[in-house]
Image (tube, rainbow, N blue to C red):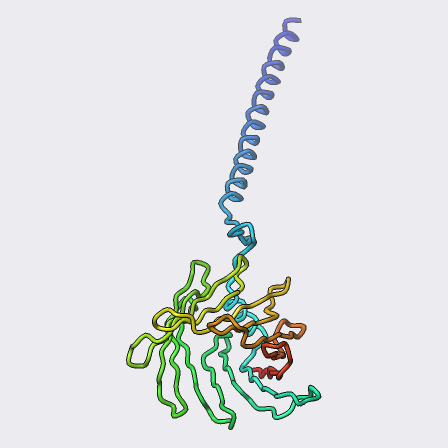
Length: 263
């Protein structure tokens, strides 16, 4: 009986020690799992929010020029020619001529624009300079003889949209100001041309559809009378393919077609 009692006491001590060991092991595992969970939660909190942030209640402010570059880069657009036609009394186009050509590099940046007169000869050429952030900072205009005659500089708002352009003579005299106004979605809605003395020279107002596509331009003289109206048509990719021109009386006077060339 004494032997059995000693054996029982020894067995109970071993069993208690075993239970204590298991409790310690499970406690350590629980702490490790809790630590891993806490680490994951910390990692989640440290990941930046990559979703677009609303600037105001109207929606996300967009930079349309940057969006256009992305589109042109993706579609590998090399140049856009504008070909304008007059309309006869029956509304049929005739006398088509190229009025301008805009060239783009492979990143979608416009690096040159050429405008032609009624005889098809170069009237003006514009070259553009950009900074490291992709903002246009200078434009040089060349006359029909190929000599620089105007210089333009630009100012931008905090969203990267152009809000002011200043035109100078090549000698440096300030000649004209261009003021740009936007809606809450970053759409250009008003373009004011001002003389050096800040008097109004011209005004253009723009309208957009629900997708943000420009659908109409209305140009006004300094006295407030309408000069002309342009409506825009698009292809399925969102590229402008045609302009419909109207006079101040609302009669269609011509059309301009866009011809895209690709890399």
